[in-house]
Image 1 (cartoon, rainbow, N blue to C red):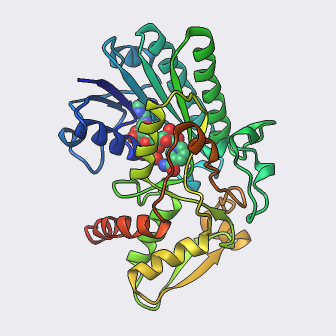
Image 2 (cartoon, helix red, strand yellow; image 1 turned 180 degrees about the vertical axis):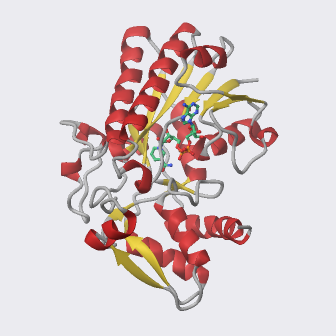
Image 3 (cartoon, helix red, strand yellow; image 1 turned 60 degrees about the vertical axis):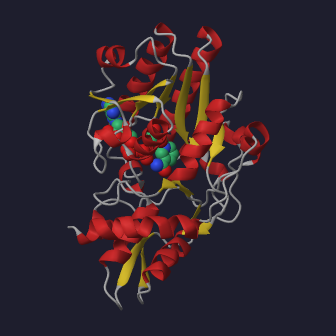
Length: 333
Ligand code: NAD
């Protein structure tokens, strides 16, 4: 039986990944600072260790010599309302750096056979993402570095931690840069939710004839990948011989208003969009509108080339799959 550890398995992607690995017959140990909000632990793992991975002693306890594969997804993170306001910068950098420093070192100590690290598209330089219709997120465009958030800088630094441990200590690593992952059992309210969940929640809460608020002018572009395809891509990357870093995302780029319209159409309600930005936003929320870069899209050629597989689900299919789950959470409030 393959023995795997999922750090951050109490979170969204980590929970889905742990469940898939358990369903496939692996022995799964999760470590997270919090319980999974939407799954009982028995559904997703054999062992759940609740601990703070910024503490090296905790990491020492969690990572054992029997571990065949370790998936490092623990991070202090959230959606635009958490990452781009500036208020959480110190914690995001301090906590996530400590986790990755501890984990890389301990994986070498315990001779873990293979390690996955989840980086983010937020590490790409802002200067390549100013044109919403033509962003450049090829893997080779990472340098000269200039991410637009401290979260992005931390991800870039942590990629380099794992790559340095690979060079100097022969740690067998796989690194992926996730682009906006969404789906059921993810954060859908409270400020840490991402755009697809926020749009669906707003639509579910709205009544016929209402308008929903969309941050920014709505013309900023992004692509979004359903979590099931993200997990499939991670497992395929792990089985490949390619270290990365490599993008895991969708190439179906939409504007944020188009994303909102997909959610509205699924609901069948007649709802309009109210874009909020500038002074109006600042007056209402007390901080500048946190929309991030103007354009971002995944670029999947390298993944196809090196791993030999491509994502295929449309954004609409993923939203149709996610909608009922968020609708149920809203109804249960
Ligand atoms: P998430 O917030 O749901 O999961 C992260 C988990 O890490 C949480 O359960 C959290 O409790 C845990 N954690 C945070 N600090 C910890 C600590 N000190 N000790 C132990 N556990 C701690 O986020 P997610 O969306 O599942 O993201 C997983 C990984 O993928 C993260 O590294 C994130 O940066 C990366 N990523 C996600 C996306 C996305 O769209 N969801 C995009 C790019 C990168």
